[in-house]
Amino acid sequence: MNYISTRGQTERKTFSQIVLMGLAPDGGLMLPESYPQVSATMLANWRNLSYKNLAFEIISLFAPEIPAEDLHDIVSRTYTEDVFGTADITPVRTLSDGIKIQALSNGPTLAFKDMAMQFLGNLFEYVLAKENKQLNILGATSGDTGSAAEYALRGKKGVNVFMLSPEGKMSAFQRAQMFSLQDENIVNIAVKGMFDDCQDIVKAVQNDHAFKEKYHIGTVNSINWGRIVAQVVYYFAGYFRATANNSERVSFCVPSGNFGNICAGHIAKQMGLPIDRLIVATNENDVLDQFFQTGEYRPRSTAQTYVTSSPSMDISKASNFERFVFDLVGRDSQQIVDLWEKVGAGTGFDLGNRLPEIREKYGFTSGKSTHADRLATIKQVFASDKALLDPHTADGVKVAREVRLPNETIICLETALAAKFDETIREAVGEVAIPRPAKLVGLEDLPQRVQIVENDDEIVKQIIRAKLDN
Ligand SMILES: *Cc1c(COP(=O)(O)O)cnc(C)c1O
Image (cartoon, rainbow, N blue to C red; front, side):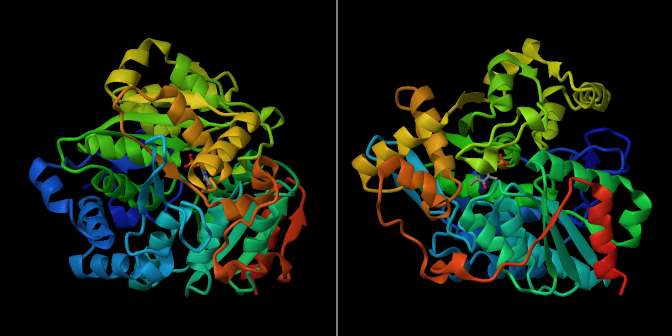
């Protein structure tokens, strides 16, 4: 299994070589030369596997050079009931209207990013120890990536984490989760700007090749291939839980911002998992909905990005989207270079002529949910099912209901727990007890550690130097 860049100017690499890498040197994203294909026999053999054994089977297809014993050890330490709260890891339940919900949000930070990040933390430790290397993670987060990365890497040897977040844009719970960590190897930096500004700083530092090399800068934001691979696993797990046999088909509805989660769904479908539709649900920041409705991709500036009540989707430039478009244009890297030149120039592009393929071959469709929709959905599901949805998951359920076809099985991915977003929950349903895992009671009262800085990559580099030069 070799990995190539969407921009076509990077030599072939192995899984171990790309897992510590962020953007490819040519500015593209790495992905497999071809997707491994899953046969009917493999699907049959996998149906009753435990989550960790399923993870082993799927990830080993993408990382054949990791010795089986080592990979077994990594997934066994990652996907435990202790870390994810249930033996099922991602249990599937059914709402009274028939929509299914797959819980991806029972990890340490109560959001789906733990699913991949806990794996990555263990994988990094393994790869670094093996190669006798050190790594300094520089990441950007709109809330959930950062905390998931910090909880996966806290206290791990050979790794420091420098995490940028947009100042004042995360919920009180998200801030408390990240900023209350007292581990020496965790550095929180709040930037006066939006998530996209944080992401631009990460890119600017990455593009300073001398700095990047000297300080061993790596990344775990959503473009990391190791994360995408780990996410592919739960599409298979959800399919097996939601169906009685492998002749059935399902659709997935995924609350989306950076296109990371649903990119893994695209890969699962390309591998041969019987997925009918991949439904992209956006909030008011509807750049992806616009693309899947019209074929026009018009990324927006920070100033045009709304602050919403599903904040982890407040993104107007979807980093992982390039991986899907690469497949869509027949893996023609010159076209990707041309299209992303237009993204860079601020005009975006129009692939409206490919809408039939986007719908039929790739199964994509989309919808959008607003603040009012989100509140109404949370309120309605609370009334009908006595359960609280988090705002992002509510966006997914709203869109799933809207686009659902007769007899279609739709699995909505639950990307966070309601406990993380209590203000919005109270706005929707009034004063209620919002269940919170016992470990997290009193979180907001803990002392917090964070540095607040101007939107300037030089300042961030200075913080990194100060920490690592002594
Ligand atoms: C990150 C996140 C999303 C968006 O996922 P993408 O992979 O960026 O599309 C949705 N919901 C929650 C709760 C998240 O943390």
